[in-house]
Length: 257
Image (cartoon, rainbow, N blue to C red; front, top):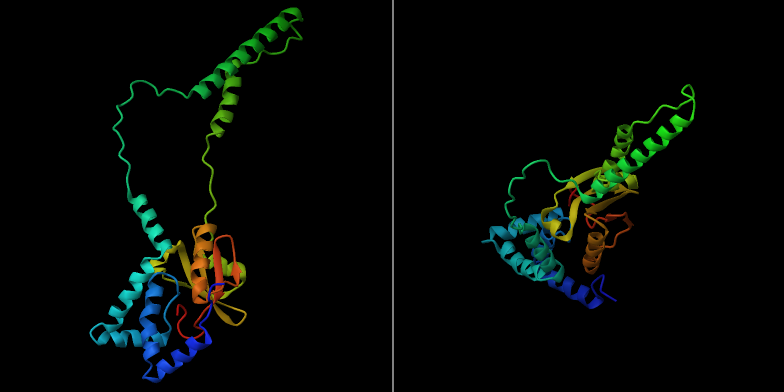
């Protein structure tokens, strides 16, 4: 079973490390800032943001400590695959220049065969109606059908088969908050979360708690994100077809903290 929290020994040494002027806490802040940049954590708390800025005053010490963690996170398999997909999307296939067509554009073979069958049926119907008109009195003869009207009536049926179908769009974080009945939704910046498939995210209030909501491009991206953040103790409590909601790690401070 994968870890979802620190062990008792780790908690002891963490507290012991903080006795020395908060050394363990100050070492944790740059690592958490790197997780925020990759979209694995919503944001730093107010205190963590303060100490991160203060550490950077000392010749960028906080930033230099974050660089090492950022490099380690970037080597995870999911981020390597995301970079490969992003590179493939930017490749533009070379298209050969087509010569201008002379005369009317050719019709597809299937559509041409359909029109031929319609015309054949219309001609046969005309022969049958003509024979019936000759064998019956003139007063009771039914009106002959127009073959062109049959072709015109059948034309929309063949064209409707090629109509463009609309595809439903994925649900956003704000729509997910509305589905949950949460209040006070605040839209938060995504930063580098798009590498994990995060489209929109934000915070809201539900049952007296501040919750975080992440919306993804689809179910596969959502499941991948849930597996990644399980190691950091983030467990979704609600989920939809393309979104998850969880209790925010920081219940106080700014909306997006």
